Image (cartoon, rainbow, N blue to C red; front, side, top):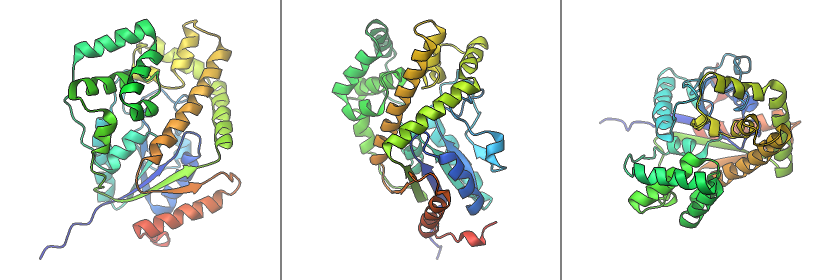
Length: 323
């Protein structure tokens, strides 16, 4: 009689931007023999390092990382492609006796991977899509977002008005299928093909916002403006998905003379705070997350022990036996 096939183990660390995932992830990876898969939709792009707060080779400390620097900035990366590529990486990592470890903050990408969502290629209407882009050009991205807000409030809550591609896509799917994206996501079976351990980081909102603002000040010191200039100089089109990302579109507006640098930094901080709120909103709808409050920044060891306990208990891994 054949034994039932066991599910591969999958560890996930998620949380809003600036919550401290990177530092914790390296220590967890060293302790539990992990290889890390980035769960960030923008870190896939080459030469976009500062604005994405991409982990540096030095910070990796020799831990293998996947889904980082795999595409040119003008490439239209998608959740479906992430799911496919990350699933392949999980199989590869598991086959070598290592623990696959997804770290990031892009809710749809991580959730679709954890529960093997099915992405439909149907629902395409190019003429309708162009109408929406034209409407946004005439009336502004906020006006188009308002239409989505009335038609599909949960999806609108999760998408920034300036994320024009995804707003248009959500309207296109509703137009062609008659079913809002939020309903399609709710209809997905929340059954994981993995033995899953999801750890979520949370902290007091005021502290999170302070860390976000400090991170953006550091990005400016590190040369974010020059990074965007270089992307444009090498031919990255302004319409590229990557330049619609927070951190890039605000600086692009400054370079195009729409407002001052001071205004660009203000917008970047405001938009990042709002993004963090949307991340947390998405995570609240996810299953299986075990939350760890990391507000006490001076107690890194305590947070590590708490997370290690969750991993050991959930995945039945004894880290003392790992190398």
